[in-house]
Length: 276
Image 1 (cartoon, rainbow, N blue to C red):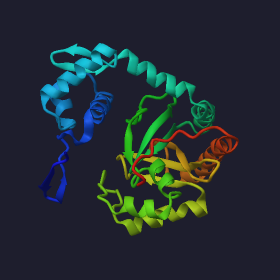
Image 2 (cartoon, rainbow, N blue to C red):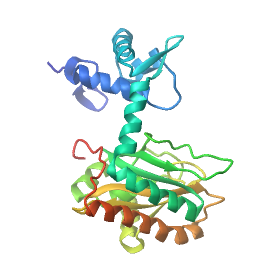
Image 3 (cartoon, rainbow, N blue to C red):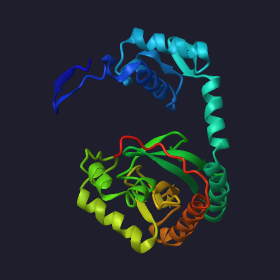
């Protein structure tokens, strides 16, 4: 039975009860385990998932026996070979990503910058492809990483093509400020989203990460629904605002090519849950 608890924002469901179910809890642990920076300490994983340490430990032991986790010593765990194998199989076997990958590679060659493909998961974007140039620096982004919709290039590109009810729900917040330049006023964000109709692309000017600028465009499926977004990202000293006017049409063209492949029958990769 679910137990309601009172917090600063009023009644809510206790996350550490059985209401989530064993499968839900295990998936949260697996997700935390898959985040960058591993191996991860048992105590940190338990805290992130709001679970007692003994419960988290039992789950990790079960995952280790099945090959989805491995003990790394000193109370630490890392992703196991079966999880890595499943991830590789999904990314290499998806029709959508098989078509997307060469488009992204060509866009990277044409622009000289890092290129991403992301899909939506609730109010976040999840990177599922990344193509980097040969250069001294690397973007902090990584495949599997999540970033907010409201302050990123790929996120806003998808947000701009969502149904109004979903846009309103996401902009109702809370909207975290990731940098001093992040827009958190829904009205101002909507004005940015409206630029997609005129330009065909959107620009993230240091709103998600300092000194990083992005140009992004949405990918739509055969029904005209959001399937994902493509972006070109670079440091501000290599990707000027003037350059975004040149790169924007190239990004939009790449997004349209992927959209055309989905219209022709390729299934779109989606992680959308919760209807908002």
